[in-house]
Image 1 (cartoon, rainbow, N blue to C red):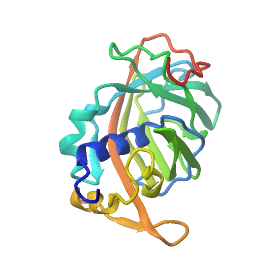
Image 2 (spheres, helix red, strand yellow):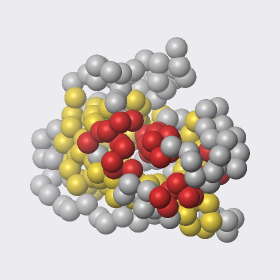
Image 3 (cartoon, rainbow, N blue to C red):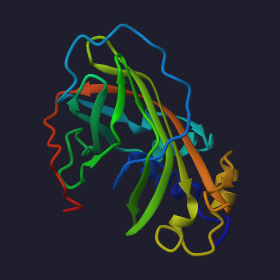
Image 4 (tube, rainbow, N blue to C red):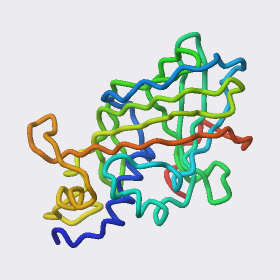
Length: 225
């Protein structure tokens, strides 16, 4: 199978990559800095934010935007586990269909975010997630957002990750699949990975996160039920 693999399947895989299902810390590239605003006047520790994945704006590959609503049926949850003067500790997981934390989905730590009230900024780490039993490498991930004064929203939020498409072969996709061909058909490009092979591709998106009052347990480590 080469270019006949469904773009919808690739969309689902790229989306799962962005969601961080199986995270360790990430290495991030540059995005435009979030615009400053009034300082946040409340503590953020213990707050949980929901991102409706069907409503994110995909910047690259642009063709992913058309199929995103078909594969994004759950919210992505971010939880602030700790707040210090200049850092925020964040964890993330997927929500259940009703918007509550899914106890069958593990919770994963993100790299500490630089906290320049009201802006948070995650940079310079490397992440490996598991898809179909295989590790998928995400690198150069950058996430930036401006938090509203009342702590209820993340505005002007942007996320980018550099994905090694070879990690999808043999697990999520058959060996020999022309993943870069699919990426190109969706308006993206494959670039050189760290080893020089042109097999890595950018996923870039803009999102909005809104505080939710669900009960959130950052200690959940379930990997399916």
